[in-house]
Image (cartoon, rainbow, N blue to C red; front, top):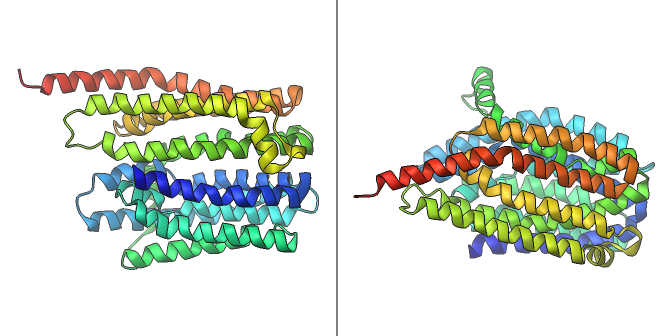
Amino acid sequence: MAGFTFVPLVGSIAPLLLLPIAARVGGVDGWYSLSVGQAVGTFGSIAISYGWNVLGPALIATSKSEKTRRAYWTESLRERLVISVIVIPITCAISIFLASAGYELFTACMTLAFCLVGLSPNWFFIGAGDPGSIARFEMLPRLIATLLAAVMIAQTNSLWSYPVLWVLSAFVGLACVQRKLGNPRIFKGSSMSGLLLGLRKRLGVALIDGMGGVYTSAPVPLAGANCTTLDASTIASADKLYRFGLLAVTTVGNTLQGWTLDPSAKNRMQRQIRAIGAHVVLGVVGMVGLGILGEFATALLFGSEVRANVSTMWCYGGAFLAVSFSTPLIRNILIPAGKTRFVLVGTAVGAVVGVVVMMLLGRAWGSSGVALGFMLSEIVMVLTILPSAMRQLLALRTSVAMSQPV
């Protein structure tokens, strides 16, 4: 718990030092373009990860040999490198279209930097229960890059160092992971048919993750397409604060997943209930915190010119609660039980409803409408998967009860 809490916490502090400087140096147009690049790049990273962030930790946690774990890593990196060749040009083109005038190339570079997050080894070390390796190979390179970028932005009055240093940090971290694992040959002995077979095998999880990325990354780009640049820059501030908050959900989820899914545990049902309870409490605290303190926090962090309004922050708070609640249902119950189709349906419904509603409400009510649509998409997703998750939980309780000695 300490390791998986400390590492993301340290990693989250650095952007809090960089982004306030970037928001003030870039102004409304620069801040909006930076945020669009991050949002589109984040979706690109989800597409590149191809479901390994969801499926991978469980595969690694249940693997009994290092050889099997290395084989999973090699297979994943091979797939993700091939996918990145397709995804990166498409996402960069989208970000150029959405960027403010004069910031097109910068926005594309921000998109590239965040697309490369899809090659992250975090899922591998989460499954291995090794937060120290996450710190060395992921957090530390990005921490150094972010701190250097903050200094250089302040000194040069230019935002360019941010994407350039992040791209470099991604490749440095990846090279170090390869060395730690014995420099496995990524494409040695592989074939196109084998690659396609692996892609088909993980298509369901990848679609779930990808469609989830559509609406979770959509608020800032949709605000840019349907609202004024100023409106879009304010929702970008709300979105940034919300993403910082989600680090807590990720931390709790990563920490409890291996513990909850431990096959040798005798109290599996109690662990599932406690994990859900922890996420609900976290969600309520996060919702209230974002709603009450969000406007002040965004003004303090990013400047009063691009601060989020209260209604937007309460909508993001509602989305935070929904995401926190759905995390254990998906990661600890439905995905491990092979019920990916239910998650896929829920994600698809949430994506369709979310994108449509965000567009319609964004045109009517600006940034507050986009935020409301985003919250509704997360709520719809939870309501869609909840019945299946409850059935699976009841089945687990029955199974545990039957296995108890009479």
